[in-house]
Length: 308
Image (cartoon, rainbow, N blue to C red):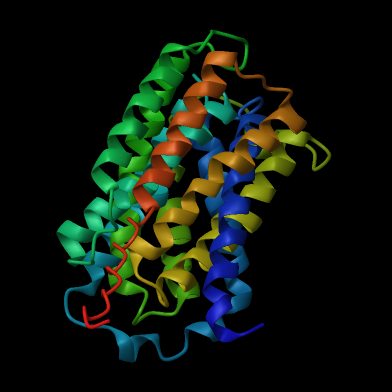
C-alpha cells in the first residue's frame, strides 16, 4: 500500500469501528449503567497499553510547556464528556438514529477548523450545514418511541451535544498529533477516561463486572468497545490527523451513520420509519453538498481572427 493511502485506510477503518460502537453500546447498556460501561471500556483500553509502554520512549523530549492542559482538554472532550452524553443518548434513542446525528460532525469540524486552525474551508459548507440541521430535526420529529428508543427526540439532542464535544476533540488532536505519537495520545485518552469514569461508576447503581461471566453478551460488548473502539479506532484516527488536515479527514465521518444503520439493523433488529429514512437521506445530502466543489467555469473558446 502506498504511503499516501495509509491515512485514508486508517480513516475508513476507524469510521467502520465507530459505526459498530453504537450497537455494541446498546448491548452493554442492557446490563450496565452508562458510567459502568464507560469505565469498563476505558479500563480495558488502559490495560492494553501496559503491553505498549516501549512505544512511548522519547515522548518526554517532545513535550512543550503548557502541553499538559492541551492533553487534558483532549481527553476531557473525548472520551469523558463525549461518552457521558453519548451513553445517555443511547438510553433514549436507537443506535441507528444516533449514528445519523453523527453525520453532522464533518460540518462542525470544518467550521471549527476554519475558525480555530485557520484551515481552508471547503466550499458550500454553510448550505450543507443548513440542510443537515433540517434533516436532523426531521429525523428526531419523525421518531417513534419503542423499547430501544423510548425518547428519540431527547436522545438525538443529547447525541448532538456529544458531537459538539467530539468536534473539540478533533481540533485538539489535530494540534497535538503532528508532534506526539498517535498511540501516546490514545493512551492519555484511555487513562484520563478511566480515572474520570471510576467515581461516576461507583456512584451509579447497577451490576458490577465481577457479577457477570465472560459469556455474558454485555460484558463481551464492553471488551469489544475497549479493545477495538477505545484503543483501535482512536489510535487510527489520531494517526490520520497527524498526516492530513482536519477538514480533509472530516468528510469520512459521514461513513459512520452508514455503518451504524447497517449494524443496528442486522444485530439489533432496529427499523426506521419511512420519514426517518427520508430525513437520513437529507442529512447525508447535506454532507455531500458541503463537500462538493463548484465546477470551474469553462474558458471561452477564442474566436479565430476575422481574415478569411
